[in-house]
Image 1 (cartoon, rainbow, N blue to C red):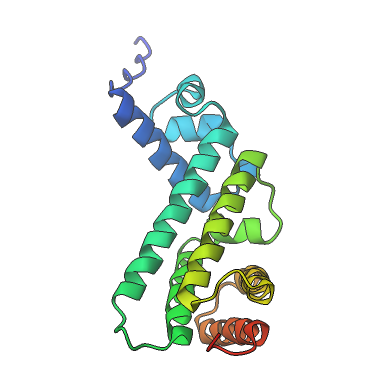
Image 2 (image 1 turned 120 degrees about the horizontal axis):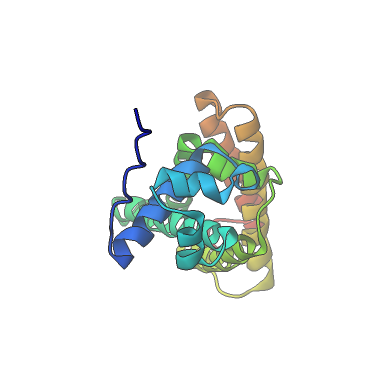
Amino acid sequence: MPASSPSPRRRLDVQQRRAAILRAAQQVYAETPYAEVPTARIARACDASPSLVFHYFGSKAGLYAEVISGALEDLAVAQEQALSHLSPGVPVRDRVRAALGVYLDRIAERPIFWGVPLQGGQEPPEAQQVRIEARARHVERLGALLGVGSFPRHRYAITGFLGFVDQSCARWVQRGCPTQDRDLLLDAALGALEGGLGDWKV
């Protein structure tokens, strides 16, 4: 009996194929760190070939950077939506807490994707640049939320707060993202920001 021939690859237009590759990469990187993922695995997950992945994204690093960029943009949108649901009179401390809570929820949902980079996991320069640019935008958004300008102390406080959050979340991931620690982490992070600012009424 002759061996069955492989199923023909489903024909997709340019945008559909690109979106399919990106979705597959998102799913794979949710389960496995970047350094451990061969391009062929992503290609198989979306019924494509490695050469097609390279055609649409240039390289494995380019695809990963796209995944990171999309995840950070989605996070920013989710945080803005959470803030929009708060009443105008909610104190700024609680607004920062709400935005940070959205981030912690994302980490708990996908601890490998969000947590491994925080723990020093290998990432390509393309992804690192995406994070640098996203961090700069985050500093601006947080400064606007706090109502601060470019006064150096305030900028140091915000930058230090984000670094504190990174390290605290890395430890949280190491501990398995225990639910009972979530509020403790939030309180510690907000305390670090308040200490850096000197006062919430800046």
